[in-house]
Image 1 (cartoon, rainbow, N blue to C red):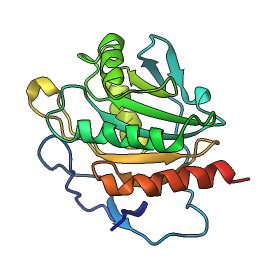
Image 2: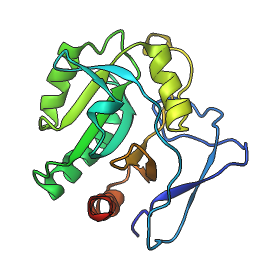
Image 3: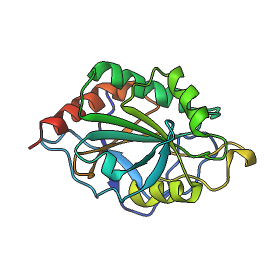
Image 4: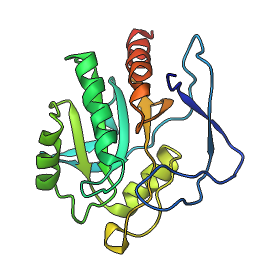
Amino acid sequence: MSVRPLTFALLGAALFLAGCGKPSDAVVILQPQPKAATLQKYWPVPDFSLTERSGKSLGLADLTGKVWVADFFYTTCPGPCPALQSRFTEVQKALGPLPDVRFLSITVDPLKDTPEVLDVYAKRFKASPMWFFCTGDRDAIVKLAHDGFKLPIAGGTPLDGPVTHTTRLVLVDRSGMVRGFYEGASKEGVDDIVGDIHRLLDEK
């Protein structure tokens, strides 16, 4: 059964994350919804400043005009992160070299995941130049996850034990508006992501 895009029910209840650590409180409940004629518009992603594996800075303006998918991970993750990045590899392969599509993977362990470490990790998943692996200030990353994507990341660092973080993939349109959520640890969602990326590319 295919995993459909996920929408938010803002009920203030707890969500158990399929992350790398123990369950934690979340800001939303995710509920599967049937396909709509047009992808729902949620909210705009706020501006941010990250450092890409190339050493160059990357912000929202660098993604404006592109359709992009974001996720959160860390390179020493003992849980679903390799599966999460494999989804991006599959989506990247299925889409081919589309000039207006980008992928953004943001580490939640910036102390360890330097640009050099991220570059090695990116090559493991055959990342194209259109797939950005980014690090930055951890407080800013947590704030971006919470406020920008409404996704929870537990406090602490991998030095304290496994980090609990979301395995959701977030789809963003050309104007920086969040348009969809997908279960990244499930291989079944790849077709949905690819299809919805094409829908946004065709959107006027």
